Amino acid sequence: MTGKLVLLHPRKFGDERGWFMETYNKTKFEALGQTYDFVQDNHSMSVQAGTIRGLHFQTPPFAQAKLVRCIRGRIFDVAVDLRKGAPTYGQWLGVELSADNADQFLIPEGFAHGFVTLEPNTEVVYKVSSTYAPANDGGLAWNDPDIAIDWPIPSDMVPTLSDKDKKQPGLAAFDTCFLYDGEPMELLEV
Ligand SMILES: Cc1cn([C@H]2C[C@H](O)[C@@H](COP(=O)(O)OP(=O)(O)O[C@H]3O[C@@H](C)C(=O)[C@@H](O)[C@H]3O)O2)c(=O)[nH]c1=O
Image (tube, rainbow, N blue to C red):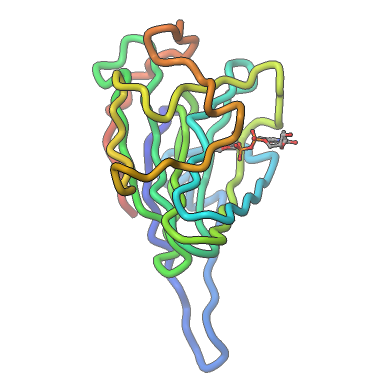
């Protein structure tokens, strides 16, 4: 299996009560060639708009694929290619996820992940394919010029960051431990 970046537009079944949607269906993921054993669910809430969490990853053997969605507010969600030898190594791809669009972003192993909140009190939930392994916790600077993410926040805004994320290194200091599986860094939308 190769891991693809996938933006899922889940089908909402509306009726007089409201709506229903599936948020994860293993069989449908397998039909897309994306077989993950999601073993942990996470939920974060960020009070301030302009909060950046990331860029984060766990190193092998605890690398994580992530299935991310925003259930309150709005985020710009980013994946950064860290796969050794990939032609797109160091490049990033971002999507907007919101409670309104209900979209989900599937980020395979080999990518760093981060997001900025675009509204106050934004809540993000995501499944991960390996449990938390603090000793394998890795990070990169959100504003590393070698990655050059175009965060959709005002240029004079000082983002809210954790102490850890204020001190993350840049890509130049990172010796990647992720292998390139040949999968192009393209967004599959379903
Ligand atoms: C990630 C994580 C953190 N924690 C604890 C450690 C710490 O005391 C507290 C807050 O952790 P952090 O500051 O790392 O939380 P946060 O900055 O929200 O980290 C998350 O960011 C996004 C972008 C991701 O992709 C996630 O994988 C995760 O790295 O929660 C767990 O117990 N389990 C976990 O799986």
